[in-house]
Length: 205
Ligand code: GRF
Image (cartoon, rainbow, N blue to C red; front, side, top):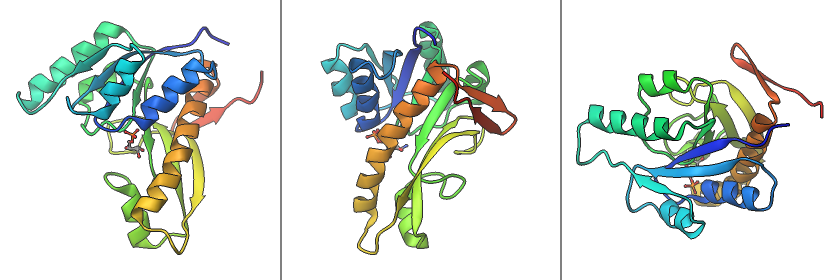
């Protein structure tokens, strides 16, 4: 057992996964604390959610600067926090190689499909269009690829005949919240062991 991790959450939008982490922190389901919410969009609703909880926020937008300077600023801002864990919760920017190397195996992402199926944007729409009967969500470590890092946890969800993209996305979102919080619990308790591409989850106390 640990005393919990210092977490930086990277967001770009609505922030429901951020809210799930905050709620888990408040109800003591996790011991970790969100130290900073960093957004790539100043209009992100996630920023309001952080403000309500008095969590420090920072906005780094790419619009007004070059790609390199955006990446430098982002890296520096996260380094300043010296986080134990970085959670990508609807973060719509690609991280630089340098960023990923600097925080190797400390960055996790939540993705709304059973990876490796349907990586990238609009995974829920991809699942509907492809016609799969089962999809789900994945929490994985972030590596240099697009949604390719070692998988920590997955949860499946049935695709109903009546589903459209939005109804599926909304059921999946509920599972995303649970899965993300569970993954943070496992990581803070040192129960996730990386073995190459595989993660082994220790079931002990
Ligand atoms: C979620 O579906 C997440 O899996 C994806 O982006 C969405 C973010 O939603 N990466 P929210 O901002 O956490 O509500």
